[in-house]
Image (cartoon, rainbow, N blue to C red; front, side, top):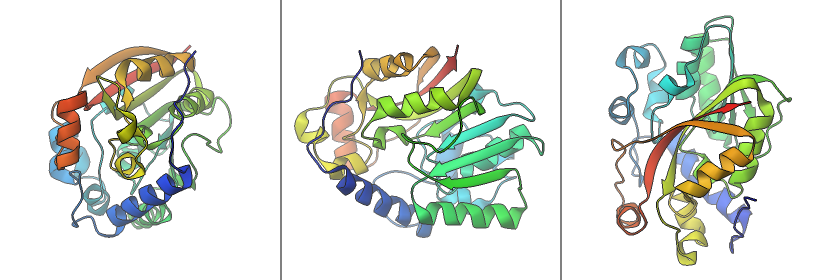
Length: 260
């Protein structure tokens, strides 16, 4: 049985720190952050330049993902897609290109400023098949068997209860639906001094799950893992992150899992 380790900090403290950080990502993408952002990062991770040329540039400026998984998701026209932790909307705009005018894309995010920016860019671009909803990725207000694909990029590591996130993804996916994600994991278990530090969780370090437990949590939710690959093009730039990478094998991976 897979369980989520208890954390010694207040989850509300963690949520407050995460919201504060990603509020700055939305409002001041050229500011100083412990992680890379923007178009050079997106292209290095594998995003297609021709796709990026077709979506709002301001969404790309606030892109803070850790990998590329649209090739794994293999989205088709007229499909319904959910993006968990949609931020300023870059992946939702890419998904809209794939599903076309007959498809639907729903971005779920808890940070008001991120959703407001994404909505403003969507409205200005006239991309009407995208909707944004307020919510936490471990408790999504979307009906069962709703989506053909669920996406997430660099967000699940921030959730205190990753098991619940994967259960929600499985619940909202149709039979045969795909979960395609990129995230931060570790090769070795992080010590309690890191896991119990809300600041390090907000920095995408403390919440990283050991990769074998991460895969087991996905499978425990009823999803069949088909692909797991490392993303060596993702670079850690802060001292804390680089130190964690060396000590505990912190890294970026992309995963494809299928329901049923």
